[in-house]
Image (cartoon, rainbow, N blue to C red; front, side, top):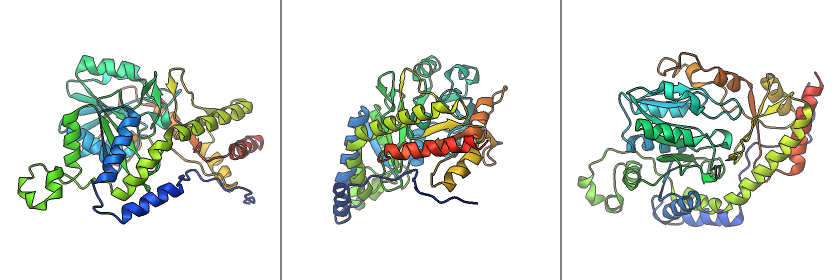
Length: 379
């Protein structure tokens, strides 16, 4: 029998200020609606926050990865190493460019790709690595960059969860050769969908800039009489001026919002530690500054706990509950290591994520922890 719900705690509730609302309205009244001043301002704010020379705004994080792969000329016959517990579209994009995903297991403490397992998977066909900064915890990048230099590999950071995370004092998205972010409804929201590529490589940035807009450069976009000059097949992966106007203002709030996330995560850790191991948060390693897009907890009773929390008004999430090699779409199209992927399989079966979002009051975190405690107290 369902219980009464004194609280309803949403997992994601974007913060939209009056200034943001006004910026969206003004962008709606403006012309043009794509690739104009708001997009340029958003890209400038983003690259300044991250600390790269270039940032290119796109329609989604998936579009960002697709174009990052194409800009780096990764494709048919190539092998690309990625974690087995990644978002399925990572494998989608690798396959869409004609390459093959090679799966590697993850660190049980963080859910991030385990660098110590990568080198045995490198073959003459290996061209790139895509480490995922899982939940907002940075992957261990130094050993991966050492491998990349030794084997002439391209590193594309999947920083969709990690806008504002730090790895040994360096911002995620500045360490690899390229990085991709999701801006749709993550640390910031550009209206529910959006993405960004960051890089210090001007040639790649220019190529992505054109690929997102049907292969056109700025002049060809501005004057459609120049259509006969277009020489590059591209896509419609553009972000609207309306969403860019929102994104630019949200980037300014990121430091404060991420501090709220970290404070909420600290409160979760303090409260859940009292449960004597019934539920285990993943770790934040000493060299990392986690940005806590999600707060992951681990229990063999994951699905029961999720249902219990939902009855009591608490939304939780499964990020990501099925490893790539167990998905029907990809099972026959990926390479699995000889020893299998046991850690990925365990974590994906046991992890539930709680929300640490900004705007969540300490009383809300206390309420969530009370419900988790109540679940385990019932036996």
